[in-house]
Length: 542
View 1 (cartoon, rainbow, N blue to C red):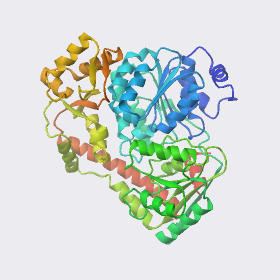
View 2: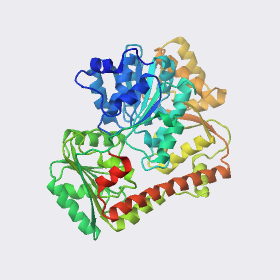
View 3: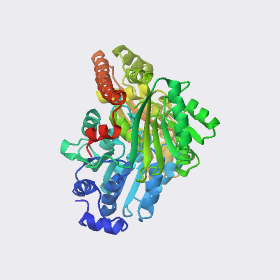
View 4: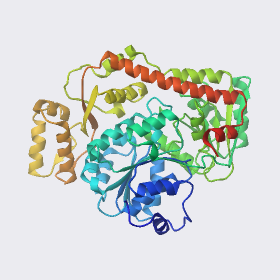
């Protein structure tokens, strides 16, 4: 039991301006109140955040909220600080040294608190893992936002989500996790099964909104004879809505005419205040674009499908699909980013015949033969010995989404065993106490370059024990930082077997086949000029 106070009383106490629970909030909160892990499917903008905020506030303990984008974290953090909670928000782009200092100062034992952290930071920051373990009795809830991102080779797959179960195992013990709340707007069956499996939930843990559809959205599919006619229609549409916030989902950056960069540059010349958003931007650039869109400095964002995840901007007036979504689920998620203030908003899908072929090719590009998977393995690991290895995914996999995804597939199979997350170099570590000085000297004596991995190998040490010792001494101020920690994942490998490469290839093929089937189903709706609202109602109810 999270609290002896009834949920209604807690709501009145912490949120006096909220009249009562909406939709399935009460059902989800009742489960969490009893300490039952839950998968909550609820439209974004309908109050999913209350489902984790209220139980944590009532518990007087700490909730760890894993969320994909800084903008959402900052917004939620600002609201919670007003409630008197102790709040820390750390995105993937937060300066490493600043983040360590803020984590060190976080008050774990001072009433209700919230730690907002990106999956990318969870993936590499061993200090967070150390703190979760140290303060595990004070953590009442783990909330994973946009949890469908854990679905491997799905359209929204983000590899760092795959590290989370392992982090929880090392921090709390495999069978001793705090209560888990997985949050998402909607799921296909494949993604749902993966969430339930990875976060160890059963099907009775699913709480689904009865009101998956919003009535303030005006939706339409329009077919054009060719790409020029379609482009002209986009010009007219954006001119009609000049000055309003609009998201245009477009092709990847490499598309010369219809990519995010090309479209943004073209419409900027027409006087629109716009920016592109795609995978080639740094985390900081992405957050700056989101912030500019939120504050109204820009009106139009030309984006790939990654934009909008975790972003709650209520006054977006329209979503334009210049690029076909690959499923009705993706379409639902993306058009749902408009009109969250409950005021009228629109969703326009612009289509010509060549679009279907292009989207199919994009989906099929994920297919991999076993030999290709073995080539990735060999390129990543030039040695198959059990020697200790280290990697920083942020730098190693920049722009290499395929290798990034395969890394966690290898982890899942056991060909890679993650041992620890910790600092990579001794240079930014400075001893304050004599005992700490001796500890760092012992490591330094085993490496001329200052590589902690080299010292661990030479001295035959346990990387988890070394990392924990560094973090313990830093936490107790026996060690101070003179620079930013270069984080790394320590692991060992064994030989990848041929049948394992075949297994990965087969799994990718099944996922791609499922994605193609869902795409063909959605394409059929577009080409038969179906009414989008009716199609969504038939799929999701409402």
